Amino acid sequence: MLNREVREWLEKVKCGSYSYDDAIRRFTELARFLTFDEIKLLKSKLEDSYSNKM
Image (cartoon, rainbow, N blue to C red; front, side):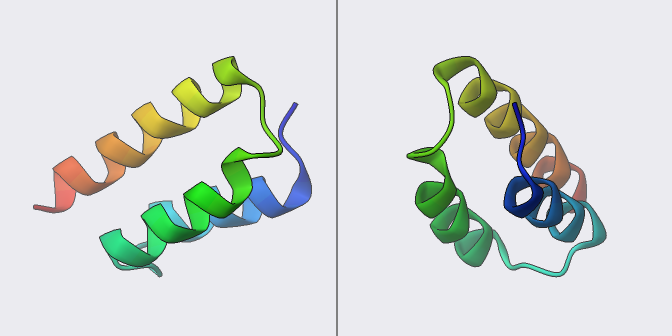
């Protein structure tokens, strides 16, 4: 399941603390510790967060 680093990253994404490029870079660092289903879930949340801002 989601660990502390992922929850903190997701919260920063939702608040707009990361640029899109920085968010993707951090996502790729975290993704190696996640299951495929968790990656799909986070990817959709990431896309939703940045599609609303653009």
